[in-house]
Image (cartoon, rainbow, N blue to C red; front, top):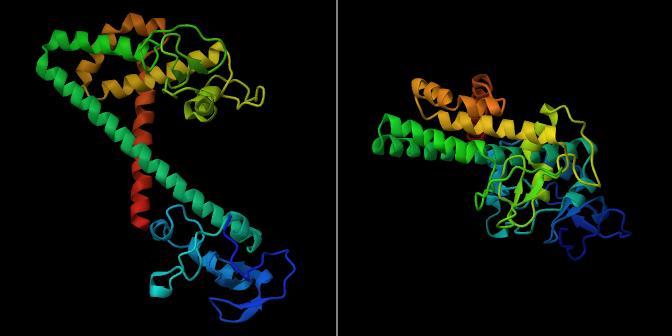
Length: 312
């Protein structure tokens, strides 16, 4: 909550005190506007126009004032010099109380856009990091082994790190699934996600409830979206959901793993893995489809980041 400044009332409070608006310089009742933590008053009409003007600015310009796009006092500008307001951003409650419904929705959309751009940029950087790491591993492998050893090592890595279900922390293999997607390793007690196998520390329920792969697997398996015991629909599921999730994970990781090799070697690796892939009902077409999905995800993240830089 924005700190209450001396002499600044809030809408709904009985007070007849008047203050001078920081924008139009007209006197008005403090209950008809909003005050920042330093007591600077903005009347309701000016505050509405001020917020409309702010949310129409480019994302980069909004983030310069506040990284999360929150509403600041109108006197918090570089041109204010020594008189620049340094009060904390106004709370969403105070902003909502002094805006029309339409303008407040626009304000929330502006903040959501900043969060989405941040997520897209993080996704792009993580994907680039993973690709560079896999390419480095491929180069190291190619320089230290011949063709036969290279193929053997590639197959071994796929079987051990992609096809085999294992704890992300101690790498203990597991096969059982009891209906809850928040798993615990029987050896090291690590908590991890049964969808993406991410290490979640001591408890995986919070991650599982919001895991993007959970929602995608729920849709792909045709399972009804239903909360169980107050938990999100992705926390509990059936064996089919688990198998669909693991097929998706394996195909995505296989596509990413094979990307660093040329087309001929990719075909050789898949031929060498033919029996293992058939046992898991994975076809080369499945892997190719997820490879295209990975490319689209990177392209989308790049476009979002480029658009953000352009607006900045």
